[in-house]
Amino acid sequence: MTLADISRHCHNITTSYLASSGGSDIVNSTKQAIRLTRHHLLEEVFRRWDPFGNQLSFSYNGGKDCQVLLILYLSCLWEFFVRNTGFSQYGSQYHRFPLRSLPTVYINQAETFSTLEKSIESARERYFLSIYESPRNQTSMPEAFENYLELHSNTEAIVIGIRHTDPFGENLQCIQSTDSGWPHFMRIQPLLHWNLANVWSLLLYSNEEICGLYGKGFTSIGGINSTLPNPALKIDTLSGSLTLENRFKWEIFNAYDKQTSSENVNVSQLSDADEALLQSTGQSGYHPGWFLTDDSQERAGRTRK
Image 1 (cartoon, rainbow, N blue to C red):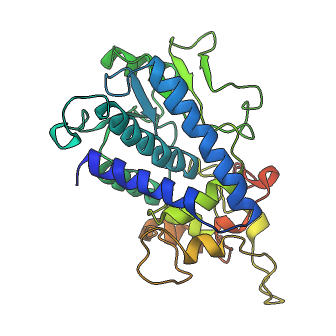
Image 2: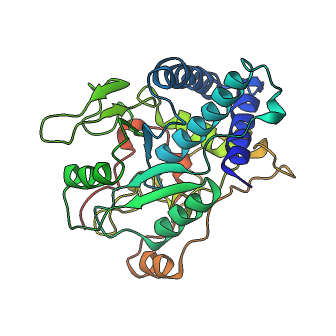
């Protein structure tokens, strides 16, 4: 497996989803979201910065938004590569994919769950991410990016998986410069128009391994001292009834390249340390994160203990 292989795989995931006939309102809106993100990347970003020329970097923290955007980004990388080879006088078999790894920055601002750390390491290997990890708690976020840019001086723009519903995201644009007090680079934010249901829909359909914390009721993952399972997903053990509906059964049963139709979701194994932490603090007994589609409650678990 190479970066070219996984990029082609992500392209196949995306085109398969777009060609599907799932038909739900969520699937239809997600298709529209995918098309707009592809337009931003292929027609606006890649025309301005060569994705194979070390001008672009990818910001990754292991979360669901970053992973969805990474799948889309790699998909577009493959399409961009194929488009360019089409203009050559030589056949595509004579062209080599220009990148062996994807320049990636991980800003590590707080002690986090070991399950998430293992998920990031797994993503590094699977998606061929050349990850720069900032020292934990030693710098502010602007300083961390400044340190990254000093080591990667060709970087002009960084792709970021932020959405309009995230804090301070409501007035952002797809392409914009950093604010005052930050090192200068262009922020590429092609996921702004996505909602929570769109993210779950494509991620669950992709059949890619996602962080195991999402299977335990987490919907937004931050530091270990400021993140809990989402209280909106707490199972009512007294009544024993299923109070929430899984709106992504089609995506799960028809997931890309899934060998047999089942309700199983490809989540990473929870670490022993995190399992013990959830048990000891009474944070067990929650529906999976994808049972939540209300954007206004997505960060309800991001409260300080």
